[in-house]
Length: 161
Image 1 (tube, rainbow, N blue to C red):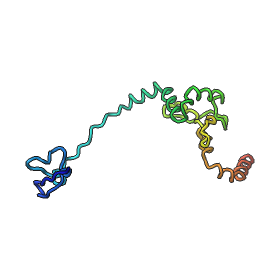
Image 2 (image 1 turned 60 degrees about the horizontal axis):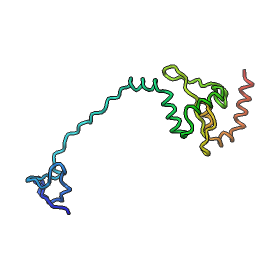
Image 3 (image 1 turned 30 degrees about the horizontal axis):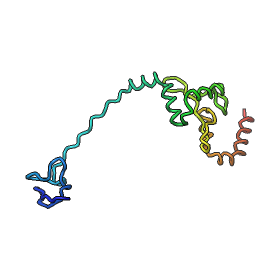
Image 4 (image 1 turned 45 degrees about the vertical axis):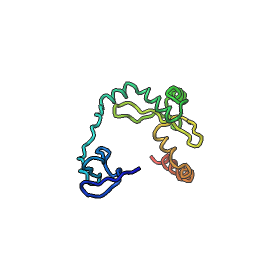
C-alpha cells in the first residue's frame, strides 16, 4: 500500500505520496514536496493569433459562418437558405417597422436583420431590426401597463410642431 520514507531536509517520516513523482522517494536522499525547492514560474508559449488571416477567412467565408451560426442557435432546419427566404418574403425589411436595417459595421457593410424567436414555443417568428428586437425584448407586462402612457406620448408627439 503506502510506504514511509524520511525526508532528508525536514527529517520527518512521510507517506510516498508526499514526495514528487518526478524524483522517486526511494532515492538515497528523498526530499518531500513541501521541502523541495520551488521551480520558477515560466509562462507557457502561446500560439500567436494572426488577426489578418482570421479577418481574411471571415470575409471570404461570411455566408458559411452565418449558416453554421444559424443552425447552431435556431436548429438544423433553420439555416442561411431559410433566412434568405424569410428575408425575401419580408421584402428585406423589419417585420414590425417595415424599414430595412440601418446599423453599419466598421467596414461599412450593413448588419443583417435579427432572427426573432418565440421563447416559449421555440419557433422563429420573423426578422427584426435591432431597435424593434430591443423593444420587443423588454418586459411585455410592463409595456402593457404603460400602454396608456405610450398612447399619450404618441398623441403628444403628433400634436407638437
